[in-house]
Length: 276
Image (tube, rainbow, N blue to C red; front, top):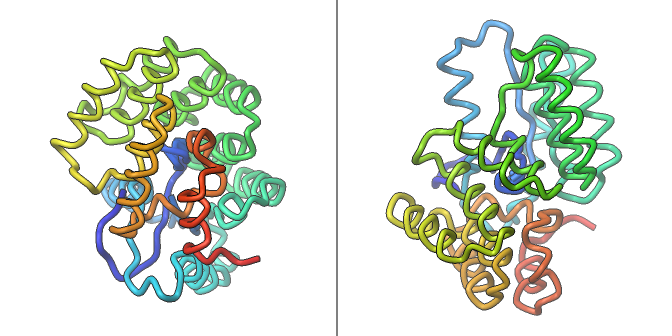
């Protein structure tokens, strides 16, 4: 999901998957560097995090969404290293280099051990690496020892979905705002995993009322999880048509696995022009 802007897609994982990242998220989009200045106000941080979670569409698609994001990463790298602020580098996640992503997350955690974002970054990196049990264990252990250091229930919800703890996942999603797209998408995916298609449809209808086509990438994740390949592929086509920022997660998003081998899916991956 995203808005037409002049800068490339970014995300706070979730994830990822969705939370794309998504759902990442995972829940989720979305190659990025997220910077955190020590003097940033709480309001600015919340606004930035909301933008990061939603992702942003990138005009000028002839350059490729990924290439645009790489330019942003390059432009910020020197500044990030110089001022020592926390940074999340998701280029490795979306290009499939999870080992490097985990090393980056550990480095951020070492630099900023009192910043909740550092812990969410680590959970997101584990999620993207499909190390779901470890992601849940790290998040829950952090919450148990220091509740103030892990404050992303929606990200934890996606991780819990991936280990089959659907009731626990729904409890985490319920902590989000009622009309928050990450919450609605996460709840829909959990219902899909539970086989409750009626509940899935209710969530999708609510998302369509609020977000319309802007949540096309999330619809694709949801329908893929219900086993409705045609609706999932149609939603993915719509996501491409509007240049949904969530598409940058397409190669690593576990929620899209049921349609990953479809020719229409592969065609969109090819159009994304990922670097070799």
